[in-house]
Length: 85
Length: 184
Image (cartoon, rainbow over all chains, first blue to last red; front, side):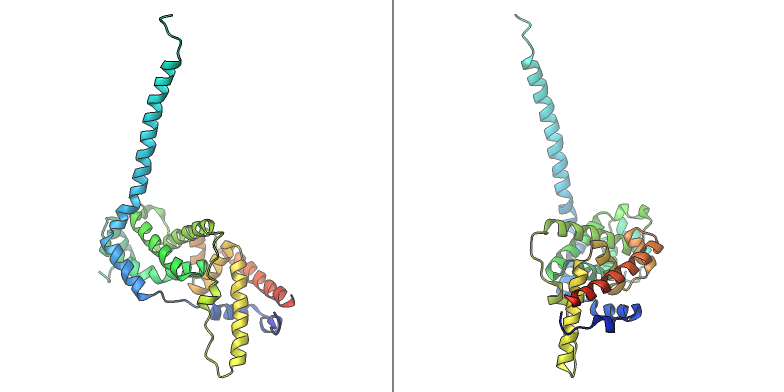
């Protein structure tokens, strides 16, 4: 980057830290966002909503295991040579 | 309610008291937002992820007690994990350049020197954004959040000595990178 002289300006750590401090300023979030999130947290239906996918996943896994088990039993019995022969 | 100490609010929030949790929320939301904002470079994503941090924290308040980590550090860790997921999921998407949102030209009676200063700051931000994740995290916690090495160590799960060492290596790398960019 032409025209910049970092070496001259940043020749010690303190100066460099001061520089970083000046560039990385804390920012203020939008007050509307703060207020909206505050209301959402206080009413907090999303707390339950966030748990629902986990419950759903657990139900799907349990259902799959049951169906898989039943199918395994059915196919195992179906594949066995008939005792009538 | 606002006179509650952190410990009292944490205890009540752990029992499902959303009013107590909102006290904690008011105390920490700006800090968490800042951390995420500087890590993502996008104000909209920062709002979205900040919401997720607090909902996740509220959902897991009952399990917080036994963790032995300050509440703020716990929030930063949740934020860090969400930001890491966000970077992973959005690695192909173009991010809004951080410097577009953050850098403001300081008021100056000498517009030319202000422009040069702003150019230098932009270069510095770009270099920080190219650094490894843990170094970005360290720089943000130190300079945006103004935390001590001990506090950063708790959040990052390292010893204070390790943070001190990483900090000096990071500053050195930043300076070297700036020198290198200048020579290009």
